[in-house]
Each structure stands twice: as C-alpha cells, then as structure tokens.
Image (cartoon, rainbow, N blue to C red):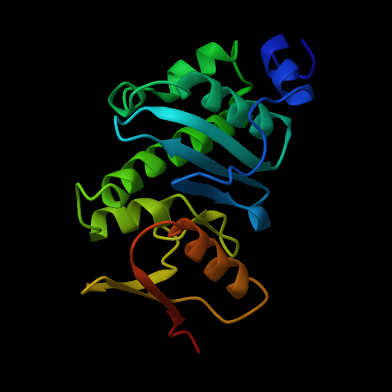
Length: 204
C-alpha cells in the first residue's frame, strides 16, 4: 500500500479503463468542479431495453478520482439500469479495496454522476418530464468555486423556472473569474436533455 491506497486503486490509476468521450453516448452527466479540484464526466449508451451497453469517463483530479471513475464504469457496464440504481458508495469502496477517508468524496462524485445520468435517462427516454427535483439534483452535483460547496447549498442558485420545455436558472453569484466556469458546468450538466436552457446572474 502506498499513501493509503489499495493495490486496486493504484492499478486503476496507472491503467484506467473506459477512458475518454463516447461519440454515440445518449446520456451524459457531470459532478464536481475543475475549479475546486475534482470533477467527473460520464458518457453512457443505454439501449431500448435499459441496458448500459457502453460507459466511459473523463476525470479531472487526483489518483483517487481517476480510479473511482474507472471502477464505477466497470461495475455497471452491461447491466440493467434497475440493477445499477441499487449501487451504493459502500459497494464501490469495497470493490476498490478501500480508500483513505480523505478521498471518499471522489467515490461519492462517481456515484453521484451515475445517479444523475440514470435520472436524466428517464427524461431523455420520455418516461418523465424534467422537473425541479431533477434540476436540483444536477445542481447539487456541481460545486461553487467561491465556497467549495454545491451550487444549492452555497446559495448560488436564486431561482429555477420551468415552462413549455424551457428552463431558466437565475444565479446569485458575481460575474467574476468563476462565473463562466459555473455557467459552462451547468450547461454541460443539461447536455442531451430535450430542453432550452437559459442561465443568468442577478448579482451586482
């Protein structure tokens, strides 16, 4: 063991599996923030039978972030979404052979991104309409660089409006060096969803 990492974590860090963008993905999701240090983006191709045919990731962060992202893709590839929904943070950490406590947030990011992807699939596949619950779940997966907390907990989101296939998000953050990063992350979170998105700031 090196600096608290299990052999499995080190193996996946040195030789991660399922890395890179997936051109034929029909679902994507992100969690974290590059500005805060750790971020994961998942790409999934889910077929008409709700089976995850392909899944890849892009990771920005430490060794644990890469390893946990790689592990989550291996754990769900080829499985039905109903089975995947039962996966927990504990399941992932056990598959990794453990993680240093300080790195648990990396595994949490991977599980969060996966759950968001499955929720988005419900909308993309036409089973559900986009609602405030899903939008808040996606925003909780994104971090505010000003506070290192998620966008909702930090108070960065002032208002969410949904009407006729349009979503409007009003932010309570200054238009400083982090503003474009926040807006970009929100737009990326909405990728593949059949909605028209508008993001604005009401901060002075």
